[in-house]
Amino acid sequence: MKLLSNLAFSQAMQAALARFMQDRDYKRHLTYKTGTLLVQRDQLVQALNKDWKNELKVTIPNGGLTVYLELDSTINTGDLYNAAATQKIIIAPGALFSLAPNFTHFMRLNFNHPTLGNREKAIAKLSSIGSKHLIR
Image (cartoon, rainbow, N blue to C red; front, side):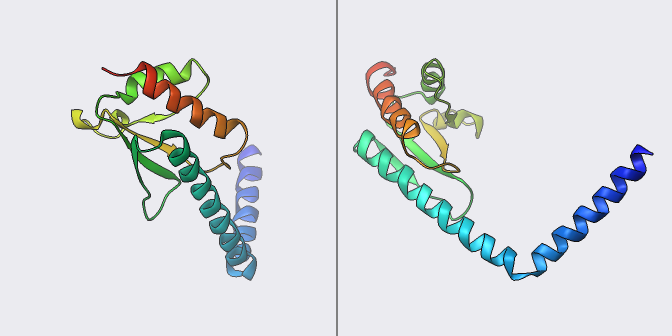
C-alpha cells in the first residue's frame, strides 16, 4: 500500500512539476531568483571588500552559489575554519576542494542568503579572526 501511494504521489508531483516548467511561471520564477541571487552575491562581495580591505582576492564564477576567496598565503583556511567555528561562523576551506597543498589559503563562501545583519557581522568577525590570529 505504501509503495502504491508513494508511486501515485510521485506521478502527481512529476505532472505538476512538468506543467510548472512548461508555463511562464517557471521562467518568471527563474528570472526572479536569478535577480535575487545577483543582489545577494553583490552584497557579499561588498561586505568582503569593506571588511577585508585588500587582504583577499575575490573570484566570481559564471555559475553556482559561491564566491572563491584567495587570502594572504600566510593564512591557513583550515585553521581559520576551526577558529571561526568557535564563533558559529562556518566557511568552506580550500583544502576541501583540492588535494594540492597550495590551496590552504583559499575558501568559498555562498551567497544563498542576504548579507545583512548577523551575516554581515560574521564577515567582519571572520576578517578580524583571519588578520589577528591565524598567521602561520
